[in-house]
Length: 215
Length: 222
Length: 60
Image 1 (cartoon, rainbow over the protein chains, first blue to last red):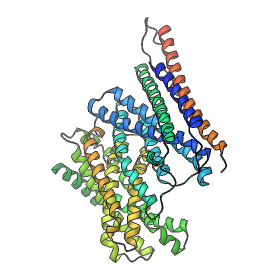
Image 2 (tube, one colour):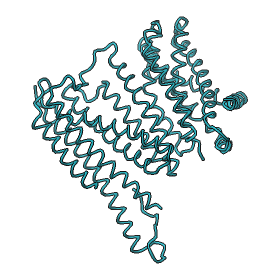
Image 3 (spheres, one colour):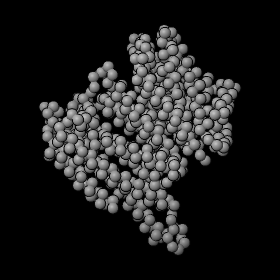
Image 4 (cartoon, rainbow over the protein chains, first blue to last red):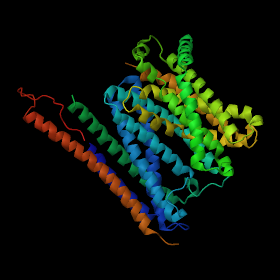
């Protein structure tokens, strides 16, 4: 079953690449470097998806104490951190030729950076607790706090950057972009989401097998 | 609710007798001021620009120290099992601890404010009420999450490491809001101009305390 | 406007590298686990006859 998902994922990723490089046009102001967006934006969307799943799984675990929910939360957090890191890295690489600097405290990068360290802390917490049940409980609580913090992060960072200051370059909203670019973005988003599902499924399965092996 | 009061009262009594936490935090606050001054140089103008940030940095560093210990005292004195075994809703313990921590932090912050005004020759008079609002809202947020996380990390090895690592990222939006609001207030602007920040802080307070009350039971299980 | 293909390549290359590395991490862990389970079935650690779950897999 996982193999099937993996196969479909590969196909979708290939489609995404084709869209991003072959079919999507060269952007007028930034040139071809803008194509990094087809990596950067789907990455951040998937990261948010991952952390939403962490929230739901955390609540489910606390209510029902189902080990499967705990494993889902753990796996999703790990993959989420992966994609968050990727978002930051691709955003930085995109920023260098575009803005002339590797790092800037613009709204999206800052928000994502905060997200990154929050959930990295989540993984750290899990790593430092040997007792499985306690680790699951604490991680669930942290997962809930972190998720509820996300809107607070968003608003605070956005106001921090845009009040008394013109909004920065980023935020290519779908409404302002030509249709073909939006389509390419969506194809890549689907591909990345499939990749997320594939990774989480395998990671959760690995966790289950590790738990079984430890008896 | 009554049990929450008992918890606060107990902590206050312990503190009044030993005064160890308050004294240590006060001393730490003084040291922080020295360090800020030394590391940023004697240039008054440059310091004045970063004052709101420095103030909250001091609050946070002090808070980390004080909050990190809030459950350690129970563990050190073998009262931890007593906490775990207490019947009924454990969230009363959370509220009690939160209230105690809030009080402690506010006292230390007041002292820090006085020290800041002294060392940097500030005239806080007119801004004081507005400042109090901002500091109050920000401290509740900090204490709410801090108390919850302190209860968690008290049961984990390497707690001194994990506590700030977990708390600081979560507090990032609160820090942004409080520093911006403090900045405006110190410049003499009315509270209305930072209403959005205050609303954010109030929302954060509600969310954090609610999550704390709802999840504390899960943190304090055997 | 220079095209900066180098940066595009760097970004996509980095993404591919990271995702591939994670995939290999998953595969390797699964393989280790499966190998350990096989070894336990064939030669149980405790010496008793029959398979028995053991808990000595060294975790990375």
